[in-house]
Image (cartoon, rainbow, N blue to C red; front, side, top):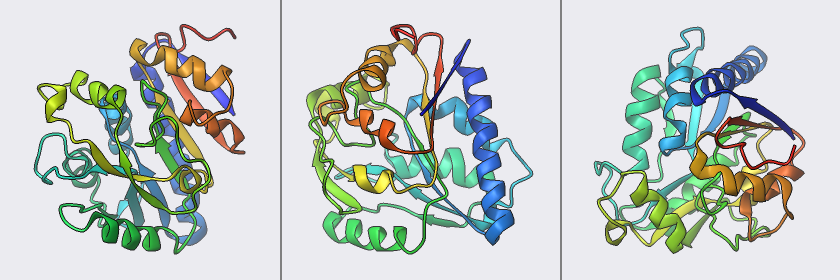
Length: 244
């Protein structure tokens, strides 16, 4: 695992986007096709802005999957991850190959179908974050490190739901759904390369626990340290509690 620390989240975002572009361009050069996993959330605003500003990517040959989606939230809700990705990635780049978790009905069936599409070929690069409770995607602690299912139906814990409300997606925690579909831990780790984008002081405690503590389901993102090709992008605030 490589850890890179930047003075602020804008420099962080630019560096992470540059690496993402290089990985996508390499896949396109080798196969004329790239497969990516995209994350959502307030911590990825600047990263996606920097990434979508790149004009030297053949975006129509990029295929996108996303990490998770709330169950019971309409696709046009301000907090919907489908809306987020459509507005912040798809419409800005012209990506035409994308696989939404349309879990408005039959979430189990949707999870199974998108999981089958996901595993048709390897993922070139995954963009992920670390939650305030250490979650990876919507795998809250204690996370399932063992299941081979590509996507899981999960219950969101209170800390996770408070984060979503605190980021402004909902007016209060009572409006945050209690269930979601999430890509599993093992599925995320199947990506050839993983970029972990984690700005802001509110993530500092989780960063320290996941990067310097025990690798444990109680700190789900700690499992990233077992992947052979992971780079973590931090800013001065999110890295403030690290010992090294």
